[in-house]
Structure formats: structure tokens, C-alpha cells
Length: 168
Image 1 (cartoon, helix red, strand yellow):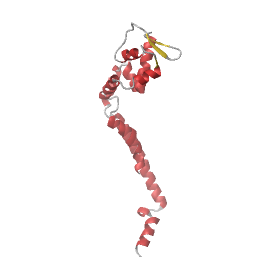
Image 2 (cartoon, one colour):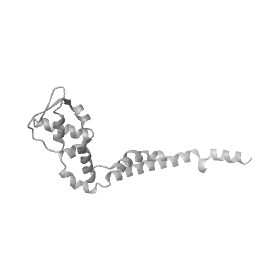
Image 3 (tube, rainbow, N blue to C red):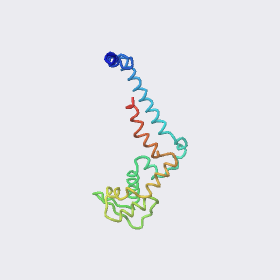
Image 4 (cartoon, rainbow, N blue to C red):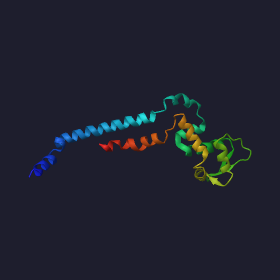
């Protein structure tokens, strides 16, 4: 006999709140979680980069390209630089051809130039140079300077923080 009336009360006013009161509380909690997620994303992205401002001036073209668009941008920038100096010829259909005797600036230019000694396009170049040690060294250098987020910070920034409002 006593379960029926308790069940009816609990379904009528969950947590002792009427429907409109519950919606207001839920809305405020959801808005607060959005603000908190935004604040945490901001803090996580700035964490470790306080001293990076004075280190940005001494970036190489390769480092700047990586920060602007990742490894693909590094390869595209390198191809463009080599083509501008006539160390690499780019055909109408995108074929890359290495020019013998070119002066190359390490570490990426020699790698791109070597790959262009074999028939390839820029797309094939990107596929061939996906996982090279130079890429990992470049990422490690930028991460140590506080210019690139590490694994845990990146996971928090990309996965956990956007899901925080769903916890409400």
C-alpha cells in the first residue's frame, strides 16, 4: 500500500521540483558546464605555452609550416621552395622531377629531393613520407618548446572537454 503513493509523488515532482523549476535548474547547469568546458579548453591550450611567445621569432620555415598545417603543409612548402629555386621541376600534371646539383637545406629538402628522383607526384610524395623520423623529431622539438600540445593535453582538448556538457 505505501509504495503506490510514494511512486506517484516521485514521478510528479522529481527532486521535489516542478517541471518548470527542473528545466530552469537543468538549463543553468548545462550553461555552466558549457562555460566551464570553454574555460578549461582555453586553459589547456595555453598550458605550457607561456614562454612560447619569445620563441616564435626563431622558427624555421619548416617549423612554421608544421604549426600552420601539419606535416602535409611542411611537404607542400618544401616543394614550393625547391621549385622556386629550380631545384625541383613541377610538371603540368603535377609530376615532380629532381634537378641534379641542387643545394639543399636540411632536414626536409634532401628527403623531398631524394623522393623526387623517382617518378612521383605531390600526392605520392605525401604518401611516401607519412612516417619518417624527421617528422617525429620536428613534433618533439615543437612540443618541447611549448608550441605543440602533447598526447594527454591533446586528448583532453579534443575529446574530454567537448563531452563535458553532456555529463549534465
